[in-house]
Image (cartoon, rainbow, N blue to C red; front, side):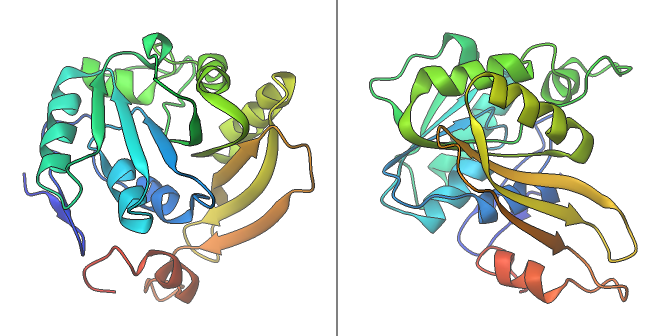
Length: 232
């Protein structure tokens, strides 16, 4: 299977259960990286988010964690073949990960299926279902690996996002930025891009439509992602 070529790097994803997706590209382009010097990508998969964040902020010291062996090897390959070979990839569950220092920024495109039927592909089940990494464990990992000024960026389907916001508040983490995403103007919002922190302040809200009714990419989506797509 051919990989996905971006302007500054290429992502091979034939060994990964979760392929390069619009969700990942949205999050990598939208995430708040301001004032950050260190970043952790939880469940890096192909390494896409780590690579996108490194392109946006080359000064970042980026670490990434992946539990699946095949995905870990592919992330290693993708990062080694990119302009940013200093991205550090770790093969272990995030629940067991210990870092030398705390991270200014954490990013994740996490598994979100709760109690849904599974297929026969064990790696894909791990990548898509919350059994191996529940929302509570994900929030716990952020708290363990962050400091008072850290931010946590992630994307979830709309329904799961509301559950995550509630669970975050219970752990004294608060929604600061929230962008609701719809595929087309005549479709309901289906994804939530979110930034959390320890600061219980006013929430910055926005919306994004990926495609026009003509099926062409919207101007807002192009403005967000043009630094990455080859033909934008």
